[in-house]
Amino acid sequence: MGQAPRRWEQADSLYGRDQSVADQRTGRTVAGKPAARRRPTAGRFLTDELASSLTPGAAARQKTIRQYFDHQYDEALAVYDDIRERLGTGPHQEVDDARLFATCSRNGAECLLDPALRPIDGAIRDRLEQMLNAGRDVAEESGLGEVAADIDYTLARIAEAAGDEAAATSILVGLVTDEAKEGYPLLAAISAMRLFWSGIAHGRAAFAWDRFDRLVRALDLFDHAWAVRVAIRARLRATNALFLRGAADDPARARALVKENIAAINRNHGLLSHNDTRDAALTAAAGDILAVEGSKRWPQFAAGPRVAMLPYGWATKTAAEIWEEAS
Image 1: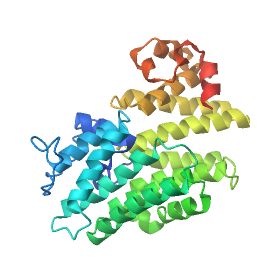
Image 2 (image 1 turned 60 degrees about the horizontal axis):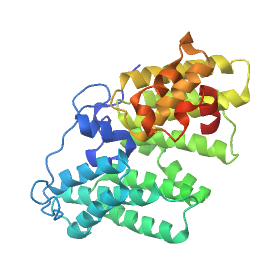
Image 3 (image 1 turned 90 degrees about the vertical axis):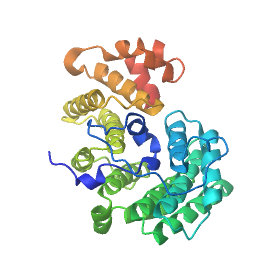
Protein backbone atom coordinates (compact mmCIF):
# COMPACT_ATOMS: atom_id res chain seq x y z
CA MET A 1 0.00 0.00 0.00
CA GLY A 2 1.32 3.45 -0.92
CA GLN A 3 2.55 5.95 1.60
CA ALA A 4 1.28 9.46 2.27
CA PRO A 5 3.63 12.31 1.39
CA ARG A 6 6.60 12.16 3.74
CA ARG A 7 6.20 15.76 4.86
CA TRP A 8 2.95 14.82 6.61
CA GLU A 9 4.29 11.83 8.54
CA GLN A 10 5.78 13.79 11.43
CA ALA A 11 3.57 16.15 13.40
CA ASP A 12 5.15 18.86 15.47
CA SER A 13 6.40 17.25 18.66
CA LEU A 14 4.40 19.75 20.69
CA TYR A 15 1.13 18.67 19.12
CA GLY A 16 1.18 15.96 21.76
CA ARG A 17 -2.15 14.18 21.98
CA ASP A 18 -2.08 10.70 23.29
CA GLN A 19 -1.14 9.67 19.78
CA SER A 20 2.39 11.08 19.59
CA VAL A 21 3.92 10.89 23.03
CA ALA A 22 5.61 7.57 22.36
CA ASP A 23 7.41 9.22 19.46
CA GLN A 24 8.66 11.95 21.81
CA ARG A 25 10.08 9.42 24.25
CA THR A 26 11.79 7.23 21.68
CA GLY A 27 12.66 9.84 19.09
CA ARG A 28 11.40 7.51 16.37
CA THR A 29 8.28 7.18 14.29
CA VAL A 30 5.95 4.25 14.71
CA ALA A 31 7.60 2.43 11.82
CA GLY A 32 11.09 2.83 13.25
CA LYS A 33 12.19 5.64 10.96
CA PRO A 34 13.95 8.70 12.42
CA ALA A 35 11.47 11.27 13.67
CA ALA A 36 11.62 14.87 12.54
CA ARG A 37 13.47 17.18 14.92
CA ARG A 38 12.88 20.90 14.95
CA ARG A 39 15.57 23.34 16.01
CA PRO A 40 15.15 24.65 19.57
CA THR A 41 12.67 27.47 19.88
CA ALA A 42 14.09 30.97 19.72
CA GLY A 43 11.88 32.01 22.66
CA ARG A 44 13.65 33.14 25.82
CA PHE A 45 10.83 32.47 28.26
CA LEU A 46 11.33 29.70 30.83
CA THR A 47 9.38 28.55 33.84
CA ASP A 48 11.22 29.06 37.11
CA GLU A 49 11.18 25.31 37.76
CA LEU A 50 12.90 24.48 34.47
CA ALA A 51 14.85 27.63 33.66
CA SER A 52 18.20 26.19 34.67
CA SER A 53 18.09 23.30 32.21
CA LEU A 54 15.33 23.50 29.61
CA THR A 55 14.32 25.81 26.79
CA PRO A 56 10.61 26.68 26.62
CA GLY A 57 10.14 24.16 23.80
CA ALA A 58 11.82 21.42 25.81
CA ALA A 59 9.75 22.30 28.87
CA ALA A 60 6.55 22.11 26.82
CA ARG A 61 7.59 18.78 25.28
CA GLN A 62 8.29 17.36 28.73
CA LYS A 63 4.88 18.46 29.98
CA THR A 64 3.21 17.15 26.83
CA ILE A 65 4.46 13.70 27.83
CA ARG A 66 3.10 14.21 31.35
CA GLN A 67 -0.21 15.37 29.92
CA TYR A 68 -0.91 12.74 27.29
CA PHE A 69 1.08 9.79 28.60
CA ASP A 70 0.69 10.12 32.39
CA HIS A 71 -2.51 12.24 32.50
CA GLN A 72 -0.86 14.80 34.81
CA TYR A 73 -3.12 17.54 33.53
CA ASP A 74 -2.72 20.16 36.27
CA GLU A 75 1.07 19.95 36.21
CA ALA A 76 1.21 20.26 32.44
CA LEU A 77 -1.36 23.09 32.34
CA ALA A 78 0.67 25.18 34.79
CA VAL A 79 3.67 25.07 32.44
CA TYR A 80 1.58 25.79 29.32
CA ASP A 81 -0.09 28.77 31.03
CA ASP A 82 3.28 30.12 32.15
CA ILE A 83 4.74 29.88 28.64
CA ARG A 84 1.64 31.50 27.11
CA GLU A 85 1.76 34.38 29.58
CA ARG A 86 5.44 35.03 28.97
CA LEU A 87 5.23 34.78 25.19
CA GLY A 88 2.01 36.75 24.88
CA THR A 89 -0.13 37.00 21.77
CA GLY A 90 2.54 38.79 19.75
CA PRO A 91 3.40 39.95 17.28
CA HIS A 92 6.20 37.39 17.42
CA GLN A 93 9.46 38.02 15.61
CA GLU A 94 10.27 34.30 15.59
CA VAL A 95 7.82 31.84 14.05
CA ASP A 96 8.88 29.22 16.60
CA ASP A 97 7.62 31.52 19.37
CA ALA A 98 4.28 31.79 17.59
CA ARG A 99 4.19 28.02 17.15
CA LEU A 100 4.98 27.49 20.82
CA PHE A 101 2.24 29.88 21.96
CA ALA A 102 -0.36 28.30 19.68
CA THR A 103 0.49 24.71 20.55
CA CYS A 104 0.61 25.47 24.28
CA SER A 105 -2.82 27.06 23.88
CA ARG A 106 -4.17 23.91 22.29
CA ASN A 107 -2.46 21.49 24.65
CA GLY A 108 -3.51 23.60 27.63
CA ALA A 109 -7.12 23.55 26.49
CA GLU A 110 -6.99 19.77 26.23
CA CYS A 111 -5.65 19.58 29.80
CA LEU A 112 -8.97 21.08 30.86
CA LEU A 113 -11.14 19.28 28.31
CA ASP A 114 -9.98 15.69 28.65
CA PRO A 115 -10.69 15.16 32.38
CA ALA A 116 -13.87 17.30 32.43
CA LEU A 117 -17.24 15.66 33.08
CA ARG A 118 -19.58 15.47 30.08
CA PRO A 119 -21.42 17.47 29.04
CA ILE A 120 -19.13 20.38 29.82
CA ASP A 121 -20.88 23.53 30.99
CA GLY A 122 -20.93 26.89 29.29
CA ALA A 123 -18.31 28.46 31.54
CA ILE A 124 -15.75 25.74 30.78
CA ARG A 125 -16.54 25.89 27.08
CA ASP A 126 -16.07 29.67 27.03
CA ARG A 127 -12.71 29.38 28.78
CA LEU A 128 -11.51 26.68 26.41
CA GLU A 129 -12.64 28.51 23.28
CA GLN A 130 -11.05 31.76 24.46
CA MET A 131 -7.73 29.97 24.96
CA LEU A 132 -7.94 28.23 21.59
CA ASN A 133 -9.05 31.28 19.63
CA ALA A 134 -6.04 33.20 20.95
CA GLY A 135 -3.78 30.37 19.79
CA ARG A 136 -5.52 30.14 16.45
CA ASP A 137 -5.15 33.87 15.80
CA VAL A 138 -1.41 33.67 16.47
CA ALA A 139 -1.07 30.59 14.25
CA GLU A 140 -2.90 32.23 11.35
CA GLU A 141 -0.94 35.46 11.66
CA SER A 142 2.29 33.47 11.40
CA GLY A 143 1.16 31.28 8.50
CA LEU A 144 1.01 28.12 10.63
CA GLY A 145 -1.86 26.42 8.82
CA GLU A 146 -1.36 22.98 10.32
CA VAL A 147 -1.37 24.34 13.86
CA ALA A 148 -4.55 26.32 13.15
CA ALA A 149 -6.18 23.17 11.76
CA ASP A 150 -5.18 21.19 14.85
CA ILE A 151 -6.82 23.87 16.98
CA ASP A 152 -9.98 23.60 14.87
CA TYR A 153 -10.04 19.87 15.56
CA THR A 154 -9.89 20.54 19.29
CA LEU A 155 -12.67 23.11 18.91
CA ALA A 156 -14.76 20.34 17.32
CA ARG A 157 -14.02 18.09 20.30
CA ILE A 158 -15.12 20.88 22.66
CA ALA A 159 -18.38 21.33 20.78
CA GLU A 160 -18.99 17.57 20.99
CA ALA A 161 -18.26 17.61 24.72
CA ALA A 162 -20.80 20.41 25.15
CA GLY A 163 -23.44 18.46 23.21
CA ASP A 164 -23.35 20.95 20.34
CA GLU A 165 -23.52 18.48 17.47
CA ALA A 166 -24.18 21.13 14.82
CA ALA A 167 -21.08 23.14 15.68
CA ALA A 168 -18.88 20.05 15.90
CA THR A 169 -20.10 18.77 12.54
CA SER A 170 -19.59 22.15 10.88
CA ILE A 171 -15.98 22.33 12.08
CA LEU A 172 -15.18 18.76 11.06
CA VAL A 173 -16.72 19.24 7.62
CA GLY A 174 -14.32 22.14 7.13
CA LEU A 175 -11.39 19.83 7.92
CA VAL A 176 -12.28 17.28 5.21
CA THR A 177 -12.68 19.55 2.19
CA ASP A 178 -10.51 18.97 -0.86
CA GLU A 179 -8.40 21.96 0.15
CA ALA A 180 -7.99 20.56 3.65
CA LYS A 181 -7.02 17.14 2.31
CA GLU A 182 -4.36 18.76 0.16
CA GLY A 183 -3.02 20.94 2.96
CA TYR A 184 -3.12 18.54 5.93
CA PRO A 185 -4.16 15.05 4.78
CA LEU A 186 -3.41 13.33 8.11
CA LEU A 187 -5.88 15.52 9.99
CA ALA A 188 -8.39 15.25 7.14
CA ALA A 189 -8.34 11.43 7.39
CA ILE A 190 -8.75 11.55 11.17
CA SER A 191 -11.55 14.12 10.94
CA ALA A 192 -13.35 12.01 8.33
CA MET A 193 -13.36 9.03 10.69
CA ARG A 194 -14.67 11.21 13.52
CA LEU A 195 -17.46 12.47 11.27
CA PHE A 196 -18.33 8.87 10.36
CA TRP A 197 -18.84 7.84 13.97
CA SER A 198 -20.60 11.09 14.86
CA GLY A 199 -23.15 10.45 12.15
CA ILE A 200 -23.87 6.99 13.54
CA ALA A 201 -24.03 8.18 17.15
CA HIS A 202 -26.55 10.91 16.32
CA GLY A 203 -28.70 8.84 13.99
CA ARG A 204 -27.73 10.60 10.77
CA ALA A 205 -26.38 7.39 9.24
CA ALA A 206 -26.18 3.65 9.84
CA PHE A 207 -22.93 1.72 10.00
CA ALA A 208 -21.82 1.09 6.41
CA TRP A 209 -18.98 -1.39 5.94
CA ASP A 210 -17.78 -0.11 2.57
CA ARG A 211 -17.46 3.48 3.82
CA PHE A 212 -15.76 2.41 7.04
CA ASP A 213 -13.31 0.26 5.11
CA ARG A 214 -12.33 3.19 2.87
CA LEU A 215 -11.81 5.48 5.86
CA VAL A 216 -9.68 3.06 7.84
CA ARG A 217 -7.57 2.24 4.78
CA ALA A 218 -6.94 5.97 4.36
CA LEU A 219 -5.62 6.09 7.93
CA ASP A 220 -3.36 3.13 7.24
CA LEU A 221 -1.52 5.18 4.61
CA PHE A 222 0.09 7.33 7.31
CA ASP A 223 3.27 6.39 9.12
CA HIS A 224 2.21 8.29 12.22
CA ALA A 225 1.23 7.17 15.71
CA TRP A 226 -1.90 9.35 15.78
CA ALA A 227 -3.27 7.65 12.67
CA VAL A 228 -2.34 4.22 14.05
CA ARG A 229 -4.20 4.89 17.28
CA VAL A 230 -7.30 6.25 15.56
CA ALA A 231 -7.35 3.21 13.25
CA ILE A 232 -7.00 0.76 16.16
CA ARG A 233 -9.88 2.36 18.04
CA ALA A 234 -11.98 2.60 14.90
CA ARG A 235 -11.55 -1.13 14.26
CA LEU A 236 -12.66 -1.86 17.81
CA ARG A 237 -15.79 0.25 17.35
CA ALA A 238 -16.46 -1.34 14.00
CA THR A 239 -16.02 -4.82 15.50
CA ASN A 240 -18.70 -3.97 18.06
CA ALA A 241 -20.97 -2.59 15.33
CA LEU A 242 -20.56 -5.83 13.39
CA PHE A 243 -21.34 -7.84 16.52
CA LEU A 244 -24.57 -5.91 16.95
CA ARG A 245 -25.59 -6.01 13.29
CA GLY A 246 -24.96 -9.71 12.74
CA ALA A 247 -25.17 -9.85 8.94
CA ALA A 248 -23.84 -12.91 7.12
CA ASP A 249 -20.41 -11.46 6.35
CA ASP A 250 -19.99 -9.64 9.65
CA PRO A 251 -18.23 -12.36 11.72
CA ALA A 252 -15.51 -12.76 9.08
CA ARG A 253 -15.12 -9.00 8.80
CA ALA A 254 -14.87 -8.65 12.57
CA ARG A 255 -12.17 -11.32 12.74
CA ALA A 256 -10.24 -9.54 9.98
CA LEU A 257 -10.40 -6.25 11.90
CA VAL A 258 -9.13 -7.86 15.09
CA LYS A 259 -6.27 -9.51 13.18
CA GLU A 260 -5.32 -6.11 11.76
CA ASN A 261 -5.35 -4.62 15.26
CA ILE A 262 -3.15 -7.41 16.59
CA ALA A 263 -0.68 -6.80 13.78
CA ALA A 264 -0.70 -3.01 14.34
CA ILE A 265 -0.13 -3.38 18.07
CA ASN A 266 2.69 -5.87 17.53
CA ARG A 267 4.31 -3.53 14.99
CA ASN A 268 4.15 -0.42 17.12
CA HIS A 269 5.84 -1.12 20.43
CA GLY A 270 5.73 2.52 21.53
CA LEU A 271 1.96 2.57 22.08
CA LEU A 272 2.12 2.35 25.87
CA SER A 273 -0.26 4.95 27.28
CA HIS A 274 -3.29 4.10 29.41
CA ASN A 275 -5.56 4.40 26.38
CA ASP A 276 -3.21 2.25 24.30
CA THR A 277 -3.26 -0.40 27.01
CA ARG A 278 -7.04 -0.40 27.08
CA ASP A 279 -7.13 -0.78 23.29
CA ALA A 280 -4.67 -3.67 23.45
CA ALA A 281 -6.76 -5.34 26.17
CA LEU A 282 -9.97 -4.99 24.18
CA THR A 283 -8.24 -6.33 21.08
CA ALA A 284 -7.07 -9.36 23.07
CA ALA A 285 -10.58 -9.91 24.44
CA ALA A 286 -12.18 -9.60 21.00
CA GLY A 287 -9.63 -12.02 19.60
CA ASP A 288 -10.62 -14.64 22.15
CA ILE A 289 -14.35 -14.09 21.63
CA LEU A 290 -13.94 -14.49 17.88
CA ALA A 291 -11.37 -17.30 18.22
CA VAL A 292 -8.89 -15.39 16.07
CA GLU A 293 -6.09 -17.84 15.26
CA GLY A 294 -7.29 -19.98 18.16
CA SER A 295 -5.08 -18.45 20.88
CA LYS A 296 -6.13 -17.20 24.31
CA ARG A 297 -4.75 -13.69 24.31
CA TRP A 298 -6.81 -12.17 27.10
CA PRO A 299 -5.60 -14.48 29.92
CA GLN A 300 -2.01 -13.82 28.81
CA PHE A 301 -2.61 -10.07 28.80
CA ALA A 302 -4.37 -10.16 32.17
CA ALA A 303 -1.34 -11.91 33.68
CA GLY A 304 1.09 -9.29 32.36
CA PRO A 305 2.36 -6.05 33.91
CA ARG A 306 0.22 -3.70 31.81
CA VAL A 307 -2.97 -4.96 33.43
CA ALA A 308 -2.29 -2.52 36.29
CA MET A 309 -3.13 0.33 33.87
CA LEU A 310 -6.61 -1.04 33.19
CA PRO A 311 -9.83 -0.24 35.07
CA TYR A 312 -10.10 -1.86 38.47
CA GLY A 313 -11.28 -5.47 38.34
CA TRP A 314 -10.61 -6.16 34.68
CA ALA A 315 -7.84 -8.63 35.49
CA THR A 316 -10.32 -11.05 37.05
CA LYS A 317 -12.96 -10.84 34.33
CA THR A 318 -13.43 -12.98 31.25
CA ALA A 319 -12.92 -11.73 27.71
CA ALA A 320 -16.69 -11.60 27.19
CA GLU A 321 -17.20 -9.60 30.39
CA ILE A 322 -14.49 -7.13 29.39
CA TRP A 323 -15.96 -6.65 25.95
CA GLU A 324 -19.52 -6.21 27.26
CA GLU A 325 -18.44 -3.66 29.87
CA ALA A 326 -16.42 -1.63 27.40
CA SER A 327 -19.10 -1.73 24.73
